[in-house]
Image (cartoon, rainbow, N blue to C red; front, side, top):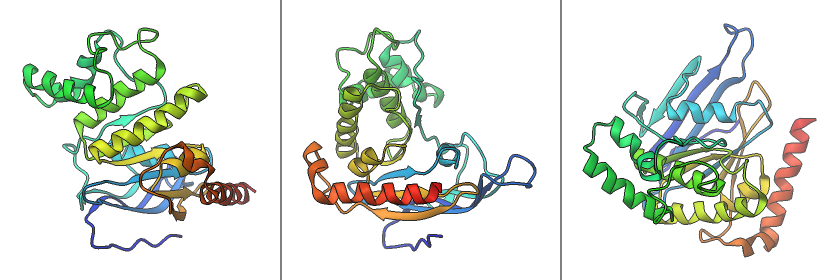
Amino acid sequence: MIKFENTEYPDIIELKKVSQSYDGGKSFIIKELDLLIEDIPNRGEFIVILGPSGCGKSTVLRYVAGLQKPTSGQIMIHGKPREEKDRIGMVFQRYSSFPWMTVLENVAIGLKFKGIAKKERMERAMEMVKIVGLEGHEKKYAQYPTLSGGQLQRVAIARSLLVNNEIILMDEPFGALDTNTRLRMQDFIISVWEKVQPTIMLVTHDISEAVYLADDIFIMSNAPAKIFEHIHVNLPYKRDRNIKRDPNFVDLVHYIEDKMMKMEM
């Protein structure tokens, strides 16, 4: 079990002794899981969660997003218990935009729920549309095939960032994309991270993707799940695809593969 220690950086997300049971405590999917993510000033942090299917990776994201409450334990945001007002967006594998609304309306919808006037929310939404590279598409309906799969995920990312540009949660967001689009979206999310500097939590099953994107990788065990390994990715902060040929990159991918295979046995 990993022991987390506070540094000089402020906490942004913390899970304390979190457990999840769906049968009244007879069995647990997650058992006394601890996770600490700190807020690194002027850059944020890119966190990736790996683990076997069914171990509760997506559930952890849902806790942070406020979409699910654990059976026991605490979810902390900025060092305080998570409250209903802590709005944090989440990007899912399936396209989550409203197809009867335009790109701009989709991006702005979170601000509508906050009661922000239409003029202001459209102006702010347009700023985010530009950041994610969708300028010129803002009046199109957010549906396939009017927009590509990658563009629809950009809409979801923009919407999440506009709700809370400090934290963005991503649950296998590139899983439904073809290989070339997925590779482009990996580079895209790196560019968004550099521009906006949020803390990103990403769940993926792709080990190479995890190493390419992450500052830190947390590996969850089989159920009842805990964090059983924390790996700091000691690669340059500025990354492009050439880094995938770096021996350190290749060695880390193989190291994680070996860890995952042993865990499955």
